[in-house]
Length: 114
Image (cartoon, rainbow, N blue to C red; front, top):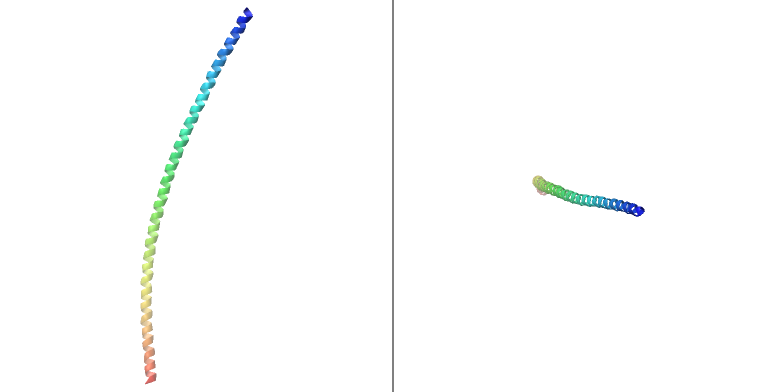
């Protein structure tokens, strides 16, 4: 009978230790799951923050490019106007000189034909 009680005592201790072990493991698994969920939330928040910052940088670059494009267009138009003005002046000078040359040639032809 004593062996039965001794065996029953050992089994009771083993069952209690097993139950404590299972509860301990269950708590650790629960903590790991909570940590995983926290990490997932942190990663999602970080990704959202990164996307927000990336959008800000993209908008800044687009605004800078737009401003640069406007500046280049304005400078290009101004340069075109200056070139047109200079070409008109050059054309006027050439026409005046050609008129003088034509007048001189006409005088020479008239003088030779008289």
